[in-house]
Image (cartoon, rainbow, N blue to C red):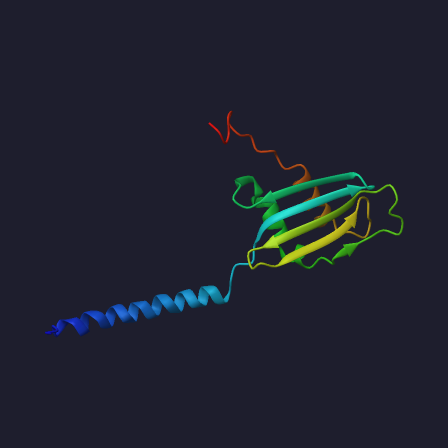
Amino acid sequence: MIISRKYPRAVAPLLGLAGVVAGAAGAASAAPDSGAVRVSVERTRGERNLSIFQVSGGIREAGEVLRLVSSPAFRGLRSRYVPADRSGRYRYEVTVHYRNDEDKRVVTYSDTESAPPLLFEVIRKVETFPTPVFPPGFPFS
């Protein structure tokens, strides 16, 4: 078997390039993006009144909600904001799923004065998120 002398010279730059690409990929995977990909709000009142609202990534309009729940201010929220008297109030459970596979859950009740306005802003935006409109016959067109 005859090997050309040019072969080792051609391989060396490619191996060096592979090392650079592998190093960049390793650095990227060492610090994964931990932005939010899904937000769900469960609203309950009593035993039979349950509503679930959800916003997911991939929808252009979801960007604002996902940015809010990815912010350091939202990530710093406590897990519970509960008033002394819960009777007659809606209970909200906000669950956020992040890209790094972590979840954040915050529970509060309507008109809870100790809850930060940011939490109620997220709840309002998720509850009033526009319903997608599908073409006639979707998905069986």
